[in-house]
Image (cartoon, rainbow, N blue to C red; front, side, top):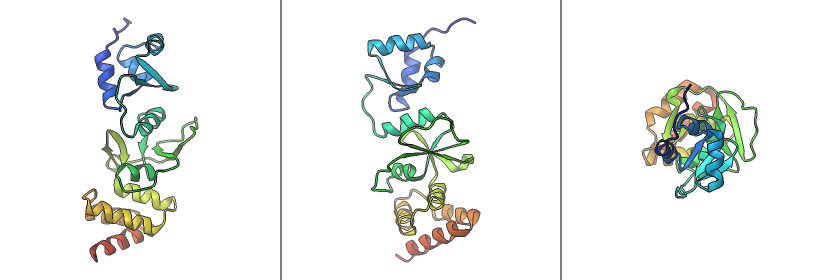
Length: 197
């Protein structure tokens, strides 16, 4: 099989969509062998951020770089979720102590500062925000309630999301019907409080 010629433009386009970051696998798809990656890292064109993740050195600093690095490290099926999703939607003042990702199965490698949750997300439970895959708000609220977030914080986030048009009332009603139990009670209460304002 003939080796592919490195395509710097293709690799840059990939990195551009990911805040300047790319994986070893993505580099290989653009024609960069491991030895060529090492060469460009030594020259300063790329920076090795962690095992399997690089940054295009000349790329400007972007918001949420830590989320991009964590997501790329966890693999293409990982999704930003829980507290990190709430922060990405701008519905939380507090920065999470860990980056929360949902993956189809538990990854073998643990990473400091990253908390992995295991779940099979349906396609309709994932959207994109700031170039990152993230759980939809109804799914995010469900995850946070299952993790024990207080009802007052959920009520506040639901009200802000509705006021800013980030989620529709109908989506929350559908989530309440689908989940039942505590999730349904809290979401219905949050909707009732919002409607009474």
